[in-house]
Image (cartoon, each protein chain N blue to C red):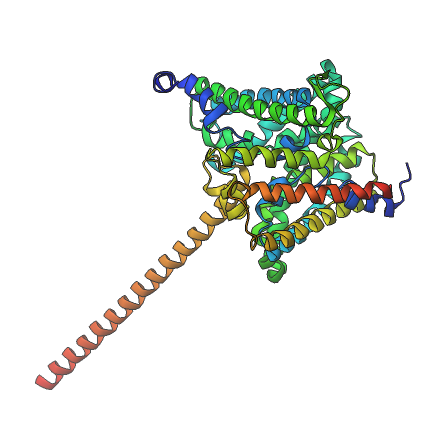
Length: 192
Length: 279
């Protein structure tokens, strides 16, 4: 496997898009994508949290869990660390940069149970990424999430104007859009 | 069923999870694993049963511990319980059903963040006895399993022409391969919801997608941890507002008291003056 950082970034951002190909973080992808602005803010918050979480998880795994042979504890440790981390990030932002907090704040609690965060941490371990690679993979994944949710928000703001048959309104048309986006993203498989 | 519903709380719980509040088809919870592992009927069934096992055990443990867990730390406590059970299920699957373990991959540890499990812990098991909690978990788990198997069945049939791995469509029918790939998951669930909408079956899907996730989780009947966090933020805000209000009232009271004192002092002064004048 060619582990150059750019390959990892592209792979996690486009080829294995976290939402459209791996189906992680679907709840917020469907729930928050109604308008462009909240989607972009959530994307920002996700980039922030996933990048930090993958860094912390990677350090923990390499220096605590693996040397102690506690590999099987990773699910428990990661989920607790992520939950605590989001709280800390929230408090830190509140104190240091109120402007950023105002933009991202309400989305931070939403991210705690976003399975994408735990998913990235576990995938990094599975792929044997080192610290830098983990951070890049996390950043790429989060960027992929942001691209997907912003694109869907754009599509949805147009669909709102459309005259749809009644049974299609709401969730079904959003899922169909996601399906079409997913087909488009499958095209990136050729990049690998 | 209706009669049973009134008579037998255990059957009522099963009915509730399977049909009335089916987590995937009605409440639209746990969509991530539902979309991801419904590539074939057997994968859907395997994932459904693994989740059911975790759900039943977590409901049991949390119901037994419900009086021991302090209210403030209940969510982290629930998460630890669920994560422990998931790890056990993961190790058991790895040891005894390696084919399933390989097929489900990362989605087994991700059962931890499945909304349904924390949602049931919070909404049911932490408030009810172990007996009905087990059946609540069983009902919800089986509802999840049925939905996943159904979606897996459809995807496998259209995408590969097989059912549980057995060829059913004649070889002359070309399967539509995209249905077992990622886009097919979105499409099949869209189709299922369209059929439900057309038949007039009430679901929460529209609500979720129309009104957005930010608020709905906290108000939805099965509050997942996300909703809990949002609710907590709201409570905190409310508390702060109340405190501010109380502070304002106290300030007003203090001001009034100060005024009263001033008045009294003025009156006393006036009195004294009057006395002096009289003298």
